[in-house]
Length: 214
Image 1 (cartoon, rainbow, N blue to C red):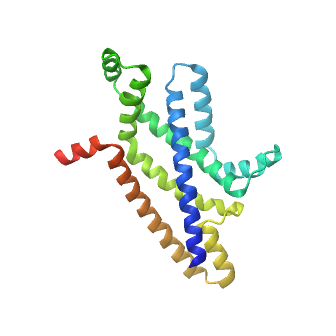
Image 2: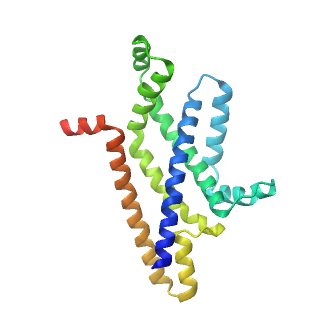
Image 3: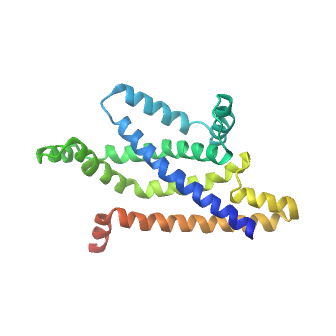
């Protein structure tokens, strides 16, 4: 149980860091894909399509084995974080872009008519409402990122799946080990979904107020 709990904590913190960084990348790419600059749009689109159309394990191996080949020495955990972050960044960029494109042009024009600066219009009129609209889809993608962290066991990151494999190799009780492992992941999924739901209520109080009035 100590081994499983250690792996569980590793999975949680790796997933949490990757989610935070991935959302930052996703927001930047979503804004870039909606920008006037053709260069920004092309670069962002190339990154998103490249990440979304290749297997995550290939991306992980490219980071883990490729960067040291270029002279950049990183640990297994660092490689896993980079791969998870880049992968989530691409998927979240498309989700956030959909929310941005759902913003009606009249809302932007109204913000400009009120004398808001472009930065304030982007943040308060476009970006925050877009995040509010797509938060359920983003939350589901965050859970998928947590589940994808199990693949990091392929590069010897000591997360939950790796802990289960270690116990299995010592006890040869595969059925019991992986049933317990599935239970841990199920519990983590429910905990993550609850956490993101509460975070959404805190980040977007307007939606909560509308729900209460209904």
